[in-house]
Image 1: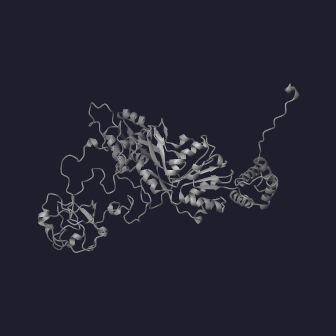
Image 2 (image 1 turned 90 degrees about the vertical axis):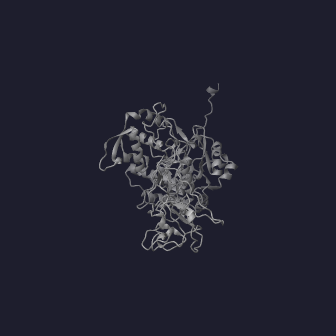
Image 3 (image 1 turned 120 degrees about the horizontal axis):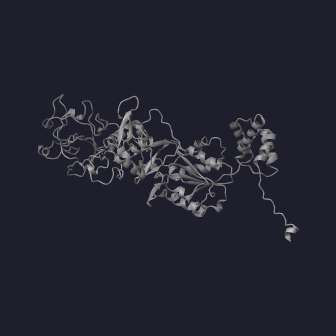
Amino acid sequence: MTDFSRRPPPGPGPSSFDAEQDPNRSITPLETPAAAASPILATPPRPRSPTMAGVPLGGDKPPEPTRSRPAQSAPLPSVIFDPMPRPRVPPAQSAGVAPPGAPPPFNEEMLDVQTERRTAPPGPPPAPVDPERRAGPGPERRGPDAERRGPPPEADRRGPSSPVSSDRRTAATAPPQGYVGPERRGFRRGEASDAPVTNRFWPAQPKTLQEAGLNTTFVEELVLKAIFFAGEMRGMDVATRLQLPTALVDEVIEGLRRQKYIDIRGGGGSGVGRSTMIYQLTTFVTDVLRQILDRNRYNGPAPVPFNEWVAAVKQQTVRGNRITRQRMEDKFGDLIIRDYIFDGIGPAMNSGRAIFFYGPPGNGKTAICQGMVNCYDGDIFVPHALLIDDFVVKMFDANIHRAVEDEPGMPSYDRRWVRCRRPLVVVGGELTLEMLDLVYTPEVKYYEAPFQMKASNGMLLIDDFGRQKVSPKDLLNRWIVPLESDVDILTLHTGKKIQVPFDVFAAFSTNLDPSDLVDDAFLRRVRYKLEVQRPDEEQFHEIFQMMCKKRGVPYDARAVDYLIDEHYRPLHRPFAACQPRDLLDQVIDMANYQGMTPRLDPTLLDAAVRSYFVRFDKPEASAPTSASAR
């Protein structure tokens, strides 16, 4: 059974919390004491974490209503606060059965509460309620085990045509769309009630600053810095820069206007409203702005709280995929992949752990890793920036993250996140140990995320392993803990250490002798090892044919046989997968220089070989002459 009652309206008096303790409250010059020495916005409070679903935002959490427990031990029903108001009727009308056509009987003292018991079977109506129990001072709570006075009237069933059922989720007074309550915990925030249950992360558009995990002071600083660096901006342009809803930014701008920090210069084109007005800074903000810029000069989209990003990484994990051979075959583009390579990288990708490639140079180790990331379906959300202990960490990198265009009809989401393909981060000989930690720039006073952090939910390739400036042993020691525990330890410039998720498919690639680079501890943590071998003569022909098709040059098998017989077999020259591409490019360049049509001509092939295969032997030391010996 379901009961409905309404919360009594708040009476006059002071607010439920002190205004000086509210982090979302902007301090105006009129409210600031005259003797205050600290400037406005000098020390912003720490951002408040977003409230949980089902709790009203923008105020204190309402007290839990008291409930009288029945004598027998029965499970308590879940309670969902229904924000829909109900019409008031005299209390005397709820004492009996309403006449036909009369409004449903509601008590003026009651709070609107919807209760349900999913597993309780429907039973006979409960016994009537003692009149003395209704006269109590507190609001009445009527649950499935409480007593009622007589059978429920037809009008109390939320519509004359609604059938009586133990599950009221299908009633006409269901919670509004997007409302999250205990019975909808399987849905993501902001998802429609009829959408299928899914574990995919989808950031909902925040409706308040508390829901965005930010405080008013921090957003005010972002607005002032945006207008300062641009000179003047329209309200909608400020909202676009911060990637926050226009309504939230308009409220912050209006608060800055009351503090006389910004002023309206004029209209910004067609349309009416504060978002179309052009704003500029005033002279009252000079000292405040100087202190804001001394703290940090980040000018971009509003950051996302660190704990929200950690939860998003777990939901978008790269672990536990189900990649099959059929799914992989068309994901490597122009590469000629042998069966043993598919059989080696497939299980490694399903594990999401790490793989170690080794073998001679020029045989496609890097190209294989670039094709592996295409095997992951779907997309992920990457934040523009993170907020860690009042410090901003820039995450989104346009050189690494490939943004995806939104499809028509796609539900809205928090624009502080960018919808991207799973990233592939490639680092080579330039890698140092300092690049694997948070990079703090004193000039701008905010952080840049390291490579492994930008590669979250994607793939990280350490190419040319062993050729870095740092020794291979020190580099391996840096990766042992993340590979073992899926957690990386980063250090702020203040000395504080933080734990970040290491949800990355790591790949190591080298063309050096692995016995000189790795030890048993590293090989134990890198479970999959794969040798990328040289192509044979048949595969060499296949690569040449594929590259000729790609470059628009007619393929001639006899010319390739001539190349092998003249320049490979006599010299016992080994094949490499990159040689057909490189030789064909030189043939095209020489043909264009001579004014010829590019083709596999023996003369052009001979010239390409002489330019491509060059050995630099050290000259032998000449014997000393007799004069020099004396």
